[in-house]
Image (cartoon, rainbow, N blue to C red; front, side, top):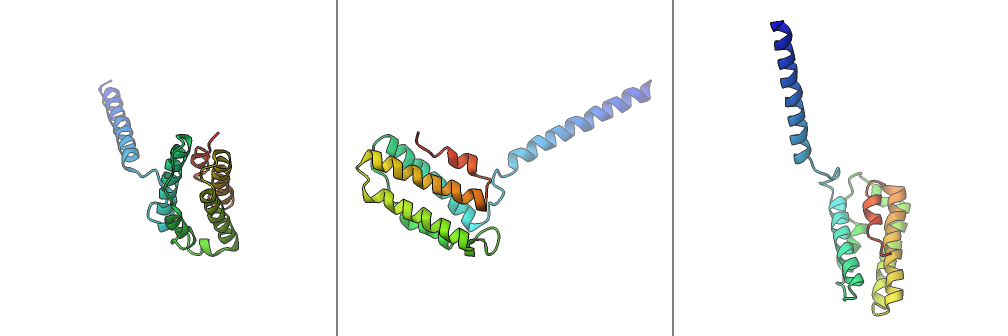
Length: 145
């Protein structure tokens, strides 16, 4: 009987210890699998800037010109070597930058601006569908409905 109680106590101790370790590991682990890539860091900054832009458009305020930092999408070092050198990636990034430029052509026309902004976000989704699908759910949150 004492052996059973000792075994149960030891098993409970191991189980609780495993749970505590797992919870602690989740707290310290990054939510980003590609945290060191220059392109991954740029994409996170682009998401933040685009979200800020969304808030400013919704509030009918002018928004910052982010084109000079977004153009780095063509040259930032990716997680996987050679990924940005593909014709598909280059075409997608060109389309993204064209849509970004279009947003600044007539920023006072609310209807046109909304259309261009959502087209910009759509270009992000289109690229991520073929290149890196992980952040698609997060990108979808950028649309203005």
